[in-house]
Image (cartoon, rainbow, N blue to C red; front, side, top):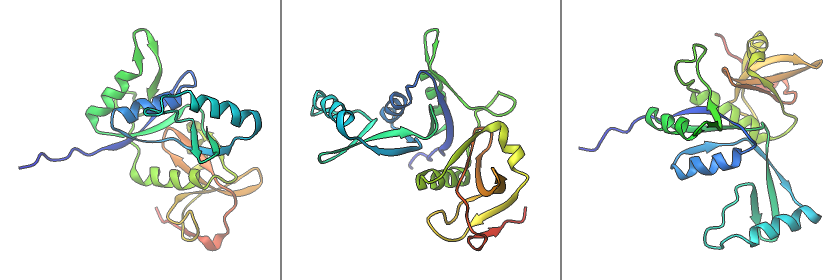
Length: 207
């Protein structure tokens, strides 16, 4: 009889010291799925030459620098959309290991977001994660807001996108800087606003 598979959930990790890519590698070495919201910036001129030199100096059999994506002669830099924020999918036991990896002696490398009572890790629902990924991977006209803004923005209509690349995304319609925007929230962590979406692409969700 095979062992019952333990469910994995999504968690948000705040990483200090601008070491989000190192944390991404650490979590990958632990065999965990991660999501880091980035945009790809094609490097040119001196920036391209510097990245090419750095990649060329690495061991060709163990080449690893998650900041860059090389496609033939073209090199892209992965630029985080949200500084030092990464998501990881883990079991309850694995997330404890992740938390332990954030401590090096007296040095704290970051923290895992917790519930309001600060006693338990905050689990992110698959629905929230899916909507956040759809929006951040669209990469157009995005604006990010802190968790403190979530309740204020939640006053808008709860809607679902029915057409286009964001189909299935759920969020709230709010007027931000004089324009109606779709706001997608991850409870207690972050909120992201998209560009304007026409009402014909939205359906209201009755709560």
